[in-house]
Length: 434
Image (cartoon, rainbow, N blue to C red; front, side):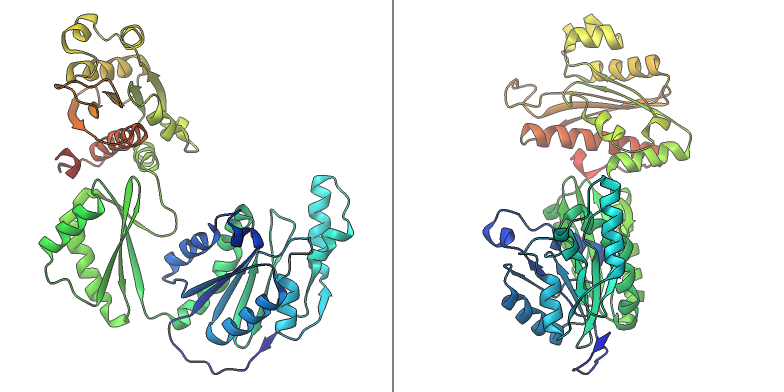
């Protein structure tokens, strides 16, 4: 149903967000849902113009719904769909639109199926979730008890969504975004390009761009979003006539950053392990790991990915010197002469892992994670990385300062990046070598 009181002006689609819940107001729950919604909108070239958070108060909710619906083209209401007396979204929306609450047959069927799957009776309390504003359209929720629903009020499309993050994530992807996307096509005047970057920090990249592009065009907005260990570089244009300019500067960035750009992002953000496994699987190749200072983290990152068994052969966690000797045939003489954190040892670790696993590629790491154990010659943060295959093993020494967690995460991801670069035959030297 559409209840219209305002004139339509074709412009950028205005999207606002209304979150409700006493637990949000007192800090019992940290709001992650608004970030999730924003991340789902970003690949569509859209963003949240404004968000409001209110307590479970019927008058406050009615006020905000009536106010926002006069300002926005899309309102996403999050939370307040549960079975208890403090879940007020349906009631507030009905009163805002001056519509009665009605028991929705599809919502009742959904609740009955939900209860049957759990082997529990459907009681009166649960049935409250089927009382929706008259004329509301159901938005399916295939994991939770509360359906979402949609209503158009004052030419504003209102989408009511559950507050449970796991339910919201599925509903956004499968239901809400497909409903919003056609509206964006009518209003959209801008495009967003997202580049997934590894190996440079925000300040380093900013300085590099200022040096290479001192006259960066004002028509192309540039932004950074750090999400360790990656960096997202976002280019935005506001007008359709600037598409060519966006294409030109995209090419310039690829020329400048080369293989530090992992991909152009759409919706999903891959991990470094996913990039590596995809390349290995495309070439029907496999990898093994020999880890000391990372304690199995590299193997864990790889095996976190579904289907890793197609390309991951084996992982060897050889924390002690004796384990390096027994499991990977590292020479006792090499260990005594050069120490565990040395180029010679990681080469032998990689060779041993290749021999014992029959994998095509190997990664080997040995370092000093700290906070103790460093020397003048080998300070805390020192690490040797070896990577390659039976034809050639390459090595690099890095000194990575920071917490133990940061050190291990950085070592694991840089080691995987070095394999990635081998798999794409990159001839570049990564910035983190410096």
